[in-house]
Length: 396
Image (cartoon, rainbow, N blue to C red; front, side):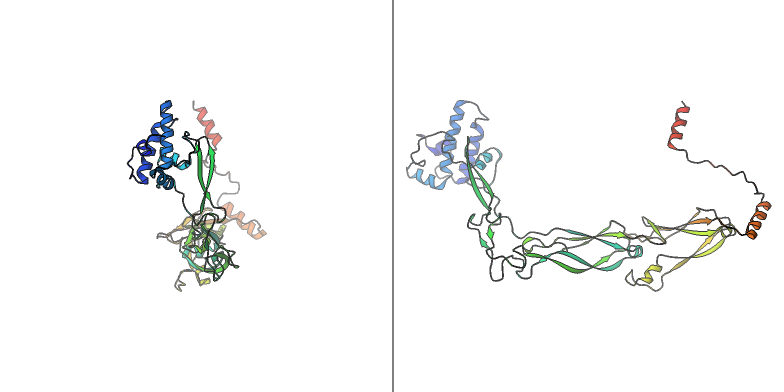
């Protein structure tokens, strides 16, 4: 090769590695055979590639500057005949890339990493969910190994730099192809990409820096939670590999069924049964509130002693079965304030067994009211889907 290598790349003899690489990338994009099929461009690409091979290698460049043969007398073969390019160099020529004098790897991956989040499910009573509570739970998670302090090495020893990759965490693999020698970086198998090895692992954690442990935790459950609500406990989850920082622990709430009340959002619903005579004549009932559960469980809410544990429900004369009465502000407190309602549904009990005297009195009442042989009253109902479709066709 008679032409000066610096002249081929269009750089001065004192150009640094970054300038040489920048010039190579510009010329490679211009003369690569896939971009420019002209035979002259193919030859030019070979010259540019060989010039970059020499000037990007400090040893070969020094030999060339001293007037020696950087190729060791191997002849002036074209690209692909002894050229020692990194595949990263070629990709950088078209797509850019960092580093000087060739592509650089990602380096060793950290041995210390953040742990994963953990999730447990906790069942609470309806009153606990409504008014808040504090629960003691036990969780089984990974914690930092106390024997090695999370380092993973036996006491008195420490991780050592990997001799295979010299602490880089990666090793180069060279493969020949029509493009020449393609060099790729892969994680080091000896150290698994960490860059360090543990010659004497800790016996307690086997070098992981963490162990499984069952430990107690206190969970404060806010008032107003519902099934599916998750309470976050920061940094109470799994400790990370190498004794890394712990993830978060999420406590998912499941509200157990209540014997009296059913919850719909922040409203409470209950059904009270009254005899037929009470519905007809009217009456007043004393019913328990959800607050009655608070006094029975000291861990719920603020353990107040002035809570209303019951309420008076007035059943007016002539109340029909299915009638609903709404008591404002007696439902479940909301997470963001306010409180739902209590909806009481009255169910009228019709007697199924009558003694002779009771039957006689009812027949006498029916006679007085003219109801011995009632015809019944048919009320408009909601039509089915097929009925609505039939009516729609009949109107056309």
